[in-house]
Length: 375
Image 1 (tube, rainbow, N blue to C red):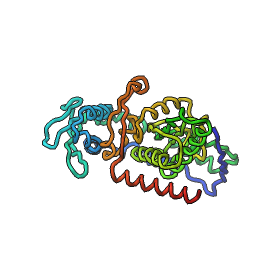
Image 2 (image 1 turned 60 degrees about the horizontal axis):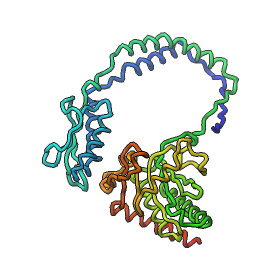
Image 3 (image 1 turned 180 degrees about the horizontal axis):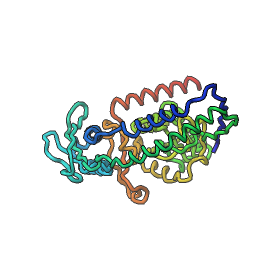
Image 4 (image 1 turned 90 degrees about the vertical axis):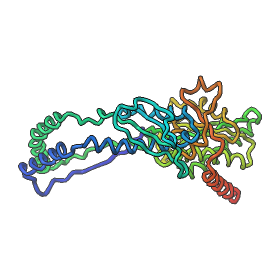
């Protein structure tokens, strides 16, 4: 791992700080930090409960519209994993219970409407557990107060001595390069589906075309493209700059470009979350041998190969990151191979919402037009 070195020189202070005054300042600051912050359980519960109910309602609007109890159960189970949640209840627009998960009498109820295109498709109630918001015993405040009172004089004396004589050393601080930290990213696997029907030269040319188009996509949706020699391409998109729906739109954009671009290849796509060696948007280049050891390239390409033409497959993590409007377009994908390849559900999307689809179409025409003009 690369490191860069930061050099810092400390010069002697021109004025000393009285020990007594510094001790008083440190004690005051410490006591304020320990005693002033006093969280109110009711306020915290109301804030968290209302926010969670709104979030669950937004992600369940499409499921309520289609009365998809299976997907409601999946959303509820994910929500119940939170220690503060005791139950989740789904209602239809007539306030009739559609599905219940957990205990409905565990504590206080928070309800939010589920809306889709300004239409209420139902309501979601999240049941909070009162005990989860019980304030922690205050004994630790007294313990920290004793530490502050005993430690402030020593800290003041040490600071006084340091400022009096100065620090003539030049410490070397080693700072890790943040770009090299592995981080979860959206990964779009693009598989050259008709590889066996092409000769060696065609395969090389087709994968090269796919890499160029993937780079164009990563310029629109911040990320980086990685060539898989003779197999296809991986695109890593930065989760800090790209939402789940954008990653899926990027996959559709790549397929659109490769369909309309003059290439002999046929491609299939799969979107998931995988680790990238660094921040995808900040990496200048990434080779396949630089990917984390647990990156299952064969598995990613196999999943992509299962997709139907002009259809994108995505895993459960990406599905839950989608906007409700895009989630409505997704459906559970079933295939005999999935039982051995994945633990969670796999979804497929055949087309994006009309507005998003038009946006992707415009991006494709702009990129293709630019490429043709510069050819």
